[in-house]
Length: 191
Image (cartoon, rainbow, N blue to C red; front, side, top):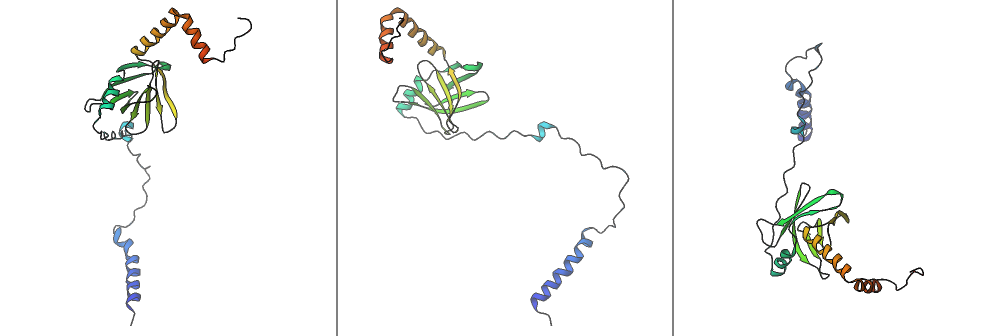
């Protein structure tokens, strides 16, 4: 008498031998002389489906400091180097947040006042950062540590730049005093 495990192995062996016959009951036909038909070409647009947009981040309610910082952001279009542009607007749903549109990206940012007086627009996902100072703004990728946009100027910043130039022209002594404070105090011999 066969043991139960040996009987099970024998039954599995018989079943494996019978499977090909059970799977294809029709006899094999010789190959046709015709070449195989090419599959229909799929349109490129159907082959590359656009990924779904990322889910909108959950935004916490802004406190008074964040609301005040949001009011200091220059809204509208910025002209940047290499003929790039960026558009900044208030977030349409949550007060105290800013949307930065660049190329095809819209980045939701939280405004933060820094200790230096610069306005930081911090991406809520932690990927980018926009810094706004008196004479320009710049967009940075914090993950790779690289500037994405530089020399972005809003019309209000242009007014500040022009006012600073006019003040320097109106008071040359103040410009000389500033140069003395920021320089080494060494004057070339020919001057």
